[in-house]
Length: 338
Image (cartoon, rainbow, N blue to C red):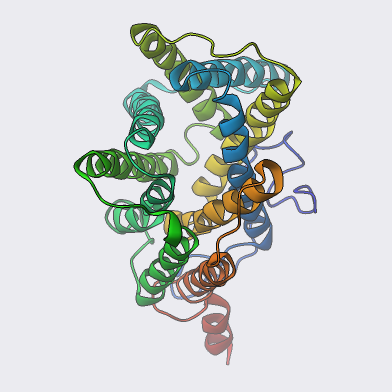
């Protein structure tokens, strides 16, 4: 299903920075229910990111972590910059928002850096579970910093059920806890917090800085920092790139980063962050599936149960948590019309 089926999301990538116009469904000052095109977009992005982990594993066989991610984001910034120039999208960030933009670049670098370093000290399963505490953190931060995005019982239960599903998916991969693993766990937790904070800042820039402008500056600024870090760590090419490497990089650069990051920022700006990020619970499920499909990794016994729990959590949070009072927005409108 294409994302150009409704003007509510985009006409492909061409209109990513054009404001969305949703049907008016608000009542009693409640935020609007999430439009179906946003739901499709969020499922698309989080699934693409899940497949991206397999591409990252392939790429890390050729380049060390910081050199690989620096190369990836430098290419992303160049391609997206050319696209923006061709479409006349502004690169300029208003002076009033330089501080927020600088914070986003720093958080982008810190989140990716902490993730890569943390993964070297802890188990893959623990990484998957801890990193996906991000929607819980986003919901908590949004309660205090985003207007109309308040915590509610359905949101909390939905997030906890979704997080429980992720834990089940990785249940047999958690590994033992050790001082070194604990250090890695804390770094991954800090990465999740950085991601959550970036979501909130992105939401607060709605209507002030275009999503593609946010991505191009985050990619360019962080790429320089990653390449500098790589140089300080004396990283070098592990293996000469071949067709497998370039296929993985092409997927990561064009689909999983350039297109998906812009679309993600746009969807975060146009929806309640606590609800949009609940779809991130799909990413680890997709990563396990594509790991089996592409890398021939074994499927876990808890895959099916974990997927069901993740889906249930997303449905609960979005169907009953949109207005913060446990009643679907459309039902509230129907009651008001009676």
